[in-house]
Length: 403
Image 1 (tube, rainbow, N blue to C red):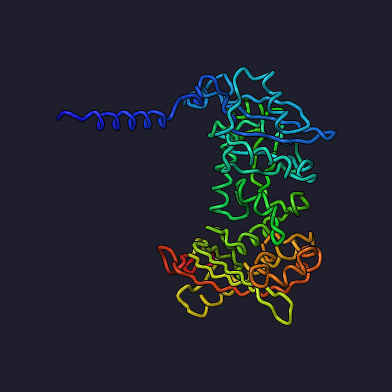
Image 2: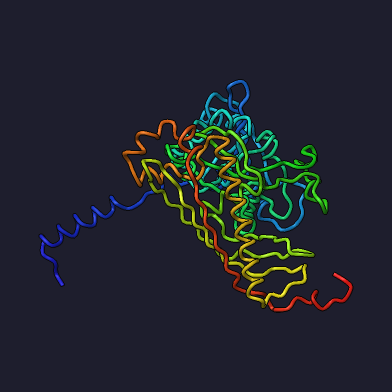
């Protein structure tokens, strides 16, 4: 087929346009030229940031055999801003620091008390930072020291803490991984305050940053997940204990699974929480806000260390009520602690804002100090025992003169 001159000209123009739209390689990053940062620590000393970065040694991370080389390297610098401190690290690192694979930002407890907003601003602005990393608080310890502890099984310490947070949240429910977008949203709302997970350095940190730490059956130093830190605005103001942390997560519908241990006559019965649903609603009565929390839970029998008839309907009903009572105690404990700290970490204020914007406008300025601490919270909880396990009758019932 012979194309006319006009058709040929149109084809040339179209091809030229497509060529200009093709992606180029001007911004490519060669792996050999990058130092991949997996963790960052922030301390504050004399109004200057002490920045610690954890850089991966790709060969050691990928290797499956023991090696005399460390899987990570740490660099540390000081600056009046996070950006300045990062750029100063170029005096030590032979490669450009690359933050797209950042998993964890550890902020010391002392630094967090001064406000974390300024520390996170760069990470929300710079295109190289993804927002799916977890900011966490190093309880009672410097972030730099915490970030240098080597971990067993998982060679990448920052990733170990990241995944442990997810696992602990999924199976124990006394902690919560919060990404950058969520923490910024909570810090900037009048009717909601943030919580962040805490981590705890336990053991001997002097051995913890050496290979000896991961060559022992029981490590000399370890990083464990602690409970939830309470914020007001962007400042750390206190901590929830374990039960209160679970109570917070029950109320905010952040429980995937956990266990509830119920005292029963001569022993205990442990239940596996399989499904929870929390609904929180704001109502207005006589121009006063009220909060209604409804929690529904499904559990399975996990372990029986008591003599009990699990086929008796009255017994099942009594156990369900005991589980609900246990959950309500944890939730009310979290509410009382938050009121004591004058920080609405449940988003009650935001619910009132949506329900009655005019009323909210009149109370929002002093909401944490006055409205939140005095708001009435009504709590309803119901529990259903779904499965008894592979045996309906505990064999302990058959033991004579024993357990």
